[in-house]
Amino acid sequence: MAYAALERMLLPERVRQRAAPHGGFSTPTICFIAVEEDTMPLLATNARGRFLPTRINSEGCAPLGFSFCPIGQEGPILNELYRTLWGLSVQNNWCNRCTAIPEAMDRLHELGVEPKSLVVSESQMAPLLGDTVSIEDARRAMGFQGYVSVVSGMQLLLSDLTDMHTLVVGPQSLTGVYMRVGDFLGLQLHRINRSIMLVQPDVV
Image (cartoon, rainbow, N blue to C red; front, side):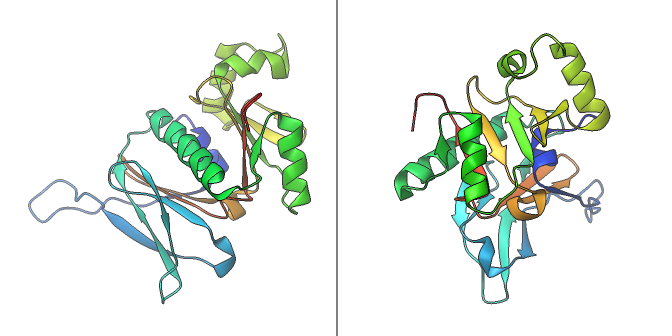
């Protein structure tokens, strides 16, 4: 089974799909997860595969919604995450927009977060690794071990991100939850202003 970048940068949790009363399987809709106060600000998927800011309820839990997203078809959700995070960062004047990978790593370190994942598109493989790894080898590595290589202490994750868009991500335990129930996927992102750095050359 191939690994996806989203699954590797977040804490993965697979839940067995429940049987429906009249046969087949029931469709998951929403799940509440216990979170700590310092996970704010939070972002979570809804049933349409979009991302919405969310909050912790009185019981110390925060929701995430599930949308239809079979394994291997997570590219649109990853790009929607990037687009949403960029918009929120501009709106709130956060400092998680960078123009280069070293700058993003420095920002995380300044926030006391260790960079653990580097999420890139196929077009960025050669600048990072030169001719040592082909795209075909990178895809095989993602399927076999879940990452392509280790770069500056980060797992290099090949993804369907738009060209020139990059994510530099902190530890899974700080960044959020990837929850899969069969062909349905729910995501909850934690500390979105300080656990994920968005890299886009010449644009801040």
